[in-house]
Image (cartoon, rainbow, N blue to C red; front, side, top):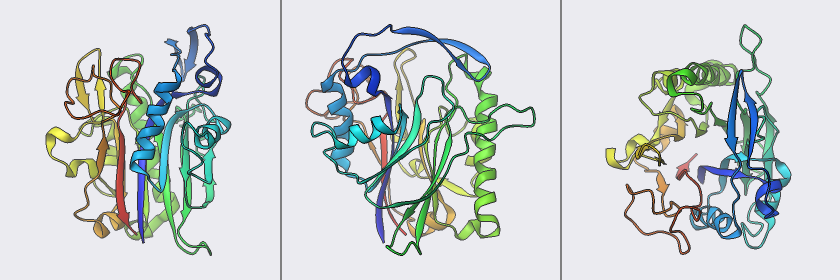
Length: 304
């Protein structure tokens, strides 16, 4: 069976602040873990959100995993409105997680979503919650009887707010826990299991903190199949850096079934401040404030 999956950080998809188009207090203090950060709530206009939807519509995935969505109502409205996704996805899943700014991970799917499990309550030995948002575990049913499924683990790891080195330890704990969750789910059958880990990891493939999940023992980072200069999904404007922050990790079983398939990184939604990209852009995407997101979506066709 063929299936197209994807992951996309849609950058602050809020019903409260974005769809209503009203001015709000754009600064407030939030608590993320044990740190207090000052953050800005951006106002996104209608055109910008249409460009966010355009990334998904143009690539037409069967299942898309999303990061930075406020809640399930927001996800359903983004899907149903005629000027966004036009009701393309009959199934939506999001469970409010740990982020005090209420940016959660979610799923839109053309196929029925079966069993779902949240890991937002997982704690370390010190009693601190491990995931900044959640590791959302969901089974996508591949037949009507539910005898065959694809398990997805949707993530948005700790941001770099507070400093790269200072936050890396938390990302390491999260990556370690993801690997543990996979082993707990599949046990000795992990090498034959159909699953994928997707999301925004907020760090690069060579980062020490991501080794617990990227060490190659359980999954393959399919973006690494692309030429080296094409392996980036995020343009960091302040530092003029390009990096891979967004991932599709296929299980060993799926990797073997799809040995030559290349992922697609959709960059047509990037604003023109992203100088590393010189290709075409979607109509209406140009200066800062028109971008679909500050991240690129990643898509891949897989056989299961």
